[in-house]
Structures are given as structure tokens and as C-alpha cells.
Image (tube, rainbow, N blue to C red; front, side, top):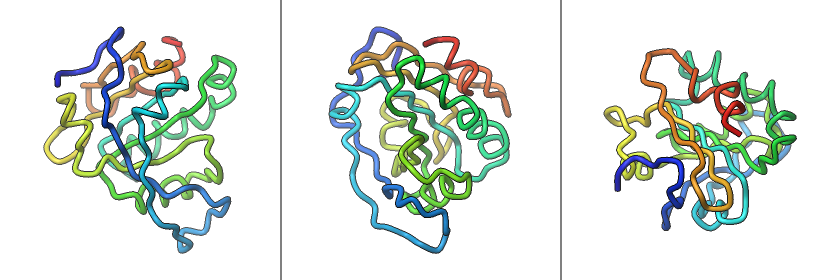
Length: 166
């Protein structure tokens, strides 16, 4: 498969893993990872999928996640049902990253793209990590899909860049 673009259907068979939020931000409290059938879930929702090179990495932690936390209400007002961050990190690291950012609920989900399976399928990886990209999926259809190729930039994939495309 090649890179996704506006107008494409979101592919079938895409799954991620995550630890469901428990309402607790204690990093030592862990649940068990569960499968998330993205293809099925995205068919009936408006979703912003954001991929980052890694949890807790400087640009991702200092700019990317905070931009979405600050604009959650704006995303909701534009009809977004779910915001999901993915990276190559395992589901426990991704859950800890959400907790470290004070996320106690499903307002933003932090999921693992294990072995970059999905990111590789669309050609958006850099070595063993995902590239920095954002995809808007509206009831199974891709309406926006962009990379940030400039190091440390979130112009296309940060909250402001994505909100401008909703």
C-alpha cells in the first residue's frame, strides 16, 4: 500500500494495542493491553490519528501532545469523536505517556503501532519508528493525511494545523 491521501478509504485490517485509561495517573498502576480494531472503529467516527516518532521524545512531549490537550474543546466542536496518538512504543509506554500528561479518560488515546505495522503499510516510517504524521478519518474516509518532514516541526500535524483542515 502507498501513502494515504484525502479521498482514500481507511484500509481494512488495521489494529493497534492500548491500555484503556483507568482514571488513575499513577504511573505504577498498569492494565493489560487490548486490541483496538481501528478499521472497524473509524468506520463510524470522525477521528484524528496522530503518529509520532516516540513517546516522551522532546518535540512530541513539549509541543505535540500539549497542542492537542489545549485544543480538545475545539476538536469536539468540529465533530471529532476521538483523538489517537500512535508510536512504535509498546502499549504500556504509551499508557504511561498519557498518564504523564494528565490524561485520565478517553479524551485522547495513546496506542502502540507495534513494529510500525500500519505506518510501514503506508510508507511513513523512519528506521524503526513512525514518521510524524496526522490523518483525519471521517466515517471511514480519509479527509486529510500529511507528514511533517522538517525536524521538530508540527506545522502539519499539531493541533493548529489539523484544526485548520477540519
